[in-house]
Each structure stands twice: as structure tokens, then as C-alpha cells.
Amino acid sequence: MNAVIDPLDRPASVPARPFLAADVGGTYARVALMQAPQDGGGEAEVLAYRKFVCADFRGLAELLQAFLDTDVRVPVRHCVIACAGQVVGDEVLNDNSAWPIHLSQLRQVLGLDDIAVLNDFEALGYALDHRVDSNARRLCGPDVQVDGPILVIGPGTGLGAAVRLHDAAGGHVLTTEAGQMDFAPNSLREREVLAQLAPQGGYVAYERIVSGPGLLTVYAALCASRGDTPVFSTPEAISAAAAARSDAQAVEAVEIFCASLGSFAGSLAMTFMAVGGVYLAGGFLYSLFALLERSAFEERFLHGRSARALLSRVPVWVTEHGRKGVLGAASWYLRRNLSGETGPGDLLAAGLSR
Image: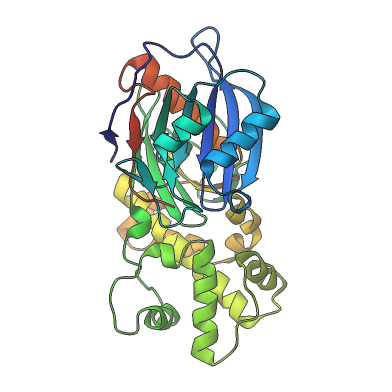
């Protein structure tokens, strides 16, 4: 759910000058200098774009300033930020963020007139439409796209999800807290992993399993259950070992990750009747495509009985994150300002998603 919080000065129209659009995750931040379309229609133009490693900077202000110093030659007074988190007072809070984000500090340091904030997966949802994504690879389901809700899911530093509803106005995106749902084990081995994570019982979110850190968590739990010392310390190392089938725990960890992602995606597809398709977004998943194809993802996605009839008609695509976050944030920014629904001077935030 979006909430309008602490409105600032609201420009009467879309700024004629270029504006910043940033997609800030727990590991990477993608920043672009955008220009509104001159004819008032179509897509915003990307004037400059760069991807940063968040850990290389003390905070978001320093990261954005680095982009302005190296890639921007014109004054910038407006900014839209797509990020996981929740605005509390002046701060965007998120457990998976590289650093806290203080909005007044950003305005002061960067000399901005206003900042708009939206959920990162809401931005991805606004980047999706029914045109063919040339980077998308079909994982399962029919090779066809129909009008209907589109679900976008992304295991990264956390686990995000959003739903794009189709309508004549160009679609509206619903943000979710789906990554915080209780993990539901489907196999005896998954129950053993859950017992390792919560030996006394209690809440374990899907995000603890289906994310980059979650893959590490599953791998460590499998090693602990067998009395082995973990060998790998990054999700990339685990997935590489699984692809080479050189480590039994790595292979099983990736299998559990993929199967659990299938259950999660199928449950959400049923919840939102996502007949328009499911997009699994992110470079991490894109690199796992061959392992996803060989995994139990599809079987777990289809669930069983009557649900299978619906879900078998839902195409599932894997797509790279790329510029989609900044493009979606810019689209949301311009659409809200043009429609008068919400101005770019409003601070908007969805709940935690990554």
C-alpha cells in the first residue's frame, strides 16, 4: 500500500529540465538522468545511466553526487527514487539497505527542490507492459501474452513482488509485502532446513530462503545438518558449484531455492490471477536460468488439482533487471505529475520488499 507522507513544494507541471531517477537496492544502485518526452507522450529519454555498488559509498547522497559529478552537465532540481523501505519521519527504513536514507539530507546536499519515493518493485511493475521484452527468457508456460494482471518477482538482497493491473490508463501497480509471508516447506528436506533456522519454531519469512542471502542460509543449514563446514561464502559461488555439480550441499541448496521460488510464484499467481504472466527479475536469477530449467520450479509453480488448470496457462519469464527500475520510476513520476494524482513533491513509500 502506498501512503502519502509529508508533502513538500509541488511543481504545477512536469519539469522541463532533466531529472534524476534512481533504483536503489541492497547491493546495487542504478541511476539515470532522464528527460521528459518533448511531445508530452511516449517514454522518458535516458540521457545518462550508470550502475553503482552501494558498498563503495558512505550513503546515497555521496552515490548520487558521484553520478552528478561524472555524468551530468546541467542543473538537476528533481529526483525520483525507487527503493525498498518505509518512510518513517525523514528516513527510509529497510533492513536490507546498505545505509539509512535521510530525505532532508538528500535535498540539502544535492540542492533538490523535491524528492519522490516509490517502492522498487512498484517501479519494475511500471516498466512492464505487453510489448515483448527482448531480454526475457521463457521458463515455463505458453509462449503467449494476454491481457491481465502481470506479476513481477525478484529475489535479490531480499525478496520483492508487485502486481501490474491492466487498464485503459496504462496500468496501475500494487505493491506487496509477499516476501515477508511465512515460508511453507514442501518436502522433508525443506522441513529439516526450517528446523535449522527456527529450532524452537516461530516465524521464518520466504525471504530467508528465496533471496541471495537466503541461498547462503539454506546452504549453511544443509552443511550444519550434515556436520560439514561450509566452503562457499557467496551466492554466486554456490550457484557455480551447483552448475558444475561439484558440491552436494550447493546442488541441494540451489534445488531448494528454485523449488521454493516456484511455490512462492505459483501462490502469488493464484492470489492475483496473474494471467498476463509472471516475470522473475534480476541478474542473479538470469544467471541461474539453466539451473531453474532443470529444477522443480515448474512443478512447484503449478501446484496441484484445480490450480494446475489455471497456472498451466500462465507464462513465466526470466528477465534481467537492467534499466527497468529507473525507467519504471521515471514513468511513474511523469504519469503521476501529468495526471495530477500525486505530485513529485510528495514522499511516497511502500512497505519493505527487498
